[in-house]
Length: 510
Image 1 (cartoon, rainbow, N blue to C red):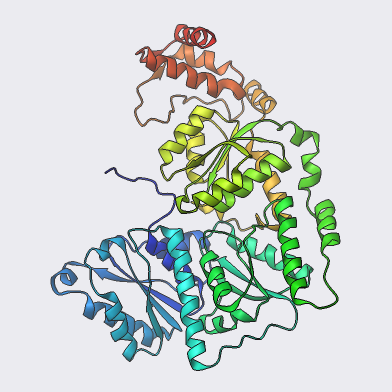
Image 2 (tube, helix red, strand yellow; image 1 turned 135 degrees about the horizontal axis):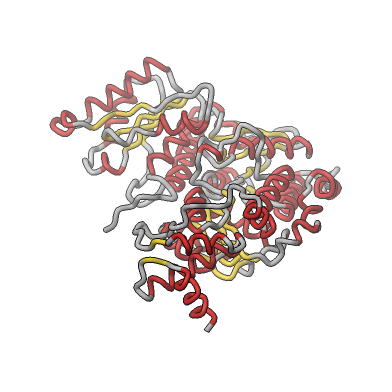
């Protein structure tokens, strides 16, 4: 057993809370010990929303441990029902509170008797699934609950909308550029004359979930959340869904063609044709196609990179880099181990190797071994890149506050292609840029050069070796520094001098 000091995906209850709090007028109650109740702080700090319903923590303390949680949990549910009158209350345990093995389902059943709100227990195994899997499962559970309720009450209307429409499933709070992606998707659909029936869970109402079957088809922008709901709707109501992520020129065109096929399957005459729209957007709205043929982008051709993130973004970015920009992907990886089979299929033929892991040290070691020109990953890979002096563009959760920009930064659709092209190009450190910074004493002349992936600082560089290292052009300096430190460790040397640098160079060339 080892201490996990970085997790790519958080614990299950965070996923449940993200989904529940994304809906309008839904209140989540978390049964947890003090210390697990950081969700409100995290959400208010990152999302920068003007208003949101906070999550209530039903704290497990020594008094609860002494006499049980039943009274406290039921009191919290009935109190929030009277205070806020939500449409739904979702109770979720955490890993630590689950150790108590209490019958929370019974608590929910008892609280439902005296509550006007619907009350459900998040049906998630908190020991076996992570944040993203729990979010996917919770969204499907809520949708299924209210559609079954509407069916029992005889108010389920399955008639389709008069004109083509779609549900967008999986946009939710704390998602990576989710709000901007949603705006871009809505704009794309509007351009094509396709209505948006519902967007869930972000900004959606559980009272309107009964209208989900009115849409002609469903859109799942991200595989991580929404796929279970789309499959349920397909199984129960025969609703087709699109899980192709419209990221990059090629997949955005494929996404639009799939919508065209779905719509034409419903129409008996006056069939739609979106090819002229695809051509216009590719030539004049998206600058990525033009940029990929420019001399600036051609300078990146063949450069080696490493890609790592959630399954959706890592697979999409890998394909964009290779087939749209001519960049060599040395390794493509994801921390979504539950979706490993799909990911391997997507990146096959686009990278030298695939990496499926939740261990950030394994990712770091892979990056150090490959020595790429740039990294495209999560905030963790950005930190790894800083220690290795390799630039990194963030393309996936886990996120930092800088991944919630106030400006418009979608990754999906044709505007998304422009944003991704900018991100890719600006993430590379070009040789001449580094060289000029060194000549004119720019910000790239670093004094601290003893960083390494290890937490042990067992090597020091003397003044002469530091001065010699600075003379080396920046675009190869990091590689020479790592090779020298590797040689020094192998030889048991603790202080790196100029002589050690030359000895390492000779050893490498033999």
